[in-house]
Length: 323
Image (cartoon, rainbow, N blue to C red):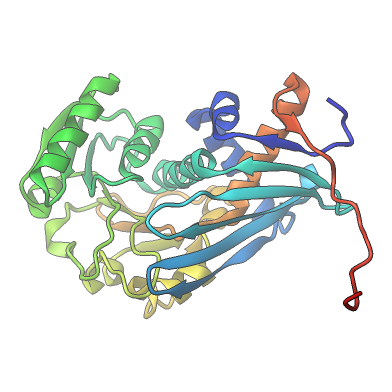
């Protein structure tokens, strides 16, 4: 494969070249670059219409001389793509099919937040919601904490039963428990992850154990909400992957005066607050994390001769008038 040609990497290529534990380390390194000013993140942008949304987010990693933007339309489903360019020359380096990559990114961010914000001995997790992101969220927490039990809640009994069975079949080694309510799932849980499309808050502070850590990943547009105001207001530390986007796009944080970037927590090695203090992490999507994983996937693909090369774009003169 000619090194000057860009390459196309499929979902299968990405899955073969990158595991979740490896992705976590890629993203954590990128967060340290971001904190020191070497990896700017692009603010997330989207436009909505009846039946769909168009999204774009990205970032630049100076260490790798890589810039990229992930974009997709969500209209019942999604087929995201992530083009990567050389940040010095502007040359197109590759295009990645980015659904698997997005799952790895979302899981990695939650894993890193849990690593730094949850109590070191945390071993009980509640997952609220059993949709497309839920399994990755459990895998993320399991990658950084030795879980003994995972409690599952979905308002649809068949969904939570199927999800619980899937977790049990995966062989993680923890007990899986179905619960009939949010309150039952989170009672005494060390880590609570919300991954729903709820429009009304369902998690309030009195449900949570002292010292619990909450990963809130579902409400990423203004009309959605998972957390009660007392959860955010009562937290000793509120952290987000991209604080500006989180406060702009999430109604849950619109009145929160102090939102700390996850990059600062990671780079400064900030210790967890007091044992009894609630912590909240809000994820709305950090394009820099997508680009960090994509850069390493691309490097491995070129090293291992994986992917399909294609001709780089070439300039032509536009037709200025009809002939």
